[in-house]
Image 1 (cartoon, rainbow, N blue to C red):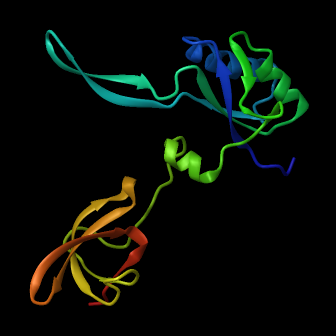
Image 2 (cartoon, rainbow, N blue to C red; image 1 turned 180 degrees about the vertical axis):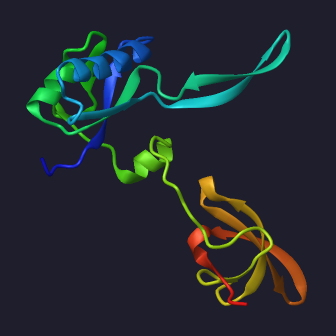
Length: 174
């Protein structure tokens, strides 16, 4: 099959997210459909709860009542997911499952994309895009997961930190 797997949202009974995720993967394994059902994810976030014993970091579901399934949508894969106990339906319009867009996948943090940059903190770089295009500066801070880099540039003789996207700077040849 040449079709590419996409992420779909499956609605579940509240509190059944983990059971549904496990059941989907188990059913795919039992029916030898791992080529159609690739991955199941429950987006989680870390939050700090204040308890009597002090602050405690816990994981909480970002979307209670939903699981994300990376799959190739066929009649067989649709029926496999739909038949899982606790799964109610695919999220979409007119009864048709609609896959998540690349932007939604990145925003949810479902798939991690490894970003490699050719510079590090302390390196001299040139801003190649935006209002400060052409300015040289020193990398002060890197936030790869947020696609941001802070560069200290000299504007009118004054050191000024500016935040730009990772691809808006390039290393200055020494």
